[in-house]
Image (tube, rainbow, N blue to C red; front, top):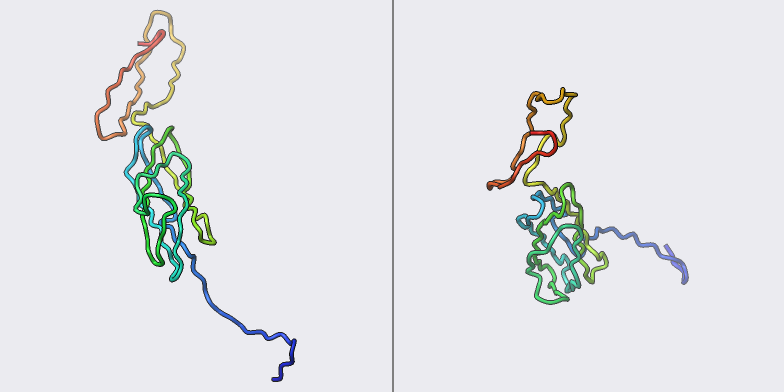
Amino acid sequence: ATVSIGDPIIIPVVGSGTAPVTVLPGLLTYTSPVGTTSAYQTVTITNATVANTLHIYNFLLSGDFVQTSTSCGTAYPYTLAPGASCFLTISFNPSIGGVRDGQLQVYDDAVTSPQVINITGAGTYPLTISPAFMNFSAQTVNTSSPAKVFTLTNHETESETFTLGTTGDFT
């Protein structure tokens, strides 16, 4: 084929790209009693490039999650050589019971910044009582109704001390 000056030349190109930074695992899940700190889990940050140094400018955690340590360095910006990895440990410190969600965001100089992983935790209560309330039927004055049972459950491995009392016309 003859090509003239100014004619476009189309060259098909095929390939696959990889992310310049990997942050694994992609999800952290915790369970911990309210007011305590869970065991940590480790997040690995890897510079997946073959030629460029990665600069990490900040880690941002949201929710009831705390960074407990890092091997990435002692002062920002942290630098990771091509192919190198560093570690970040995260714990869960629930302030209230129930599901608590958050994120880890890694701010760096990669085009995909920030890298984000989702974090979820379940805050549990050390002691629970069930049922949470109880109805008593009408009762003749100065007589006792049949006893009803509440169950107090300790969700921890250690003993708990508590005081149980009644108010009003209940004994």
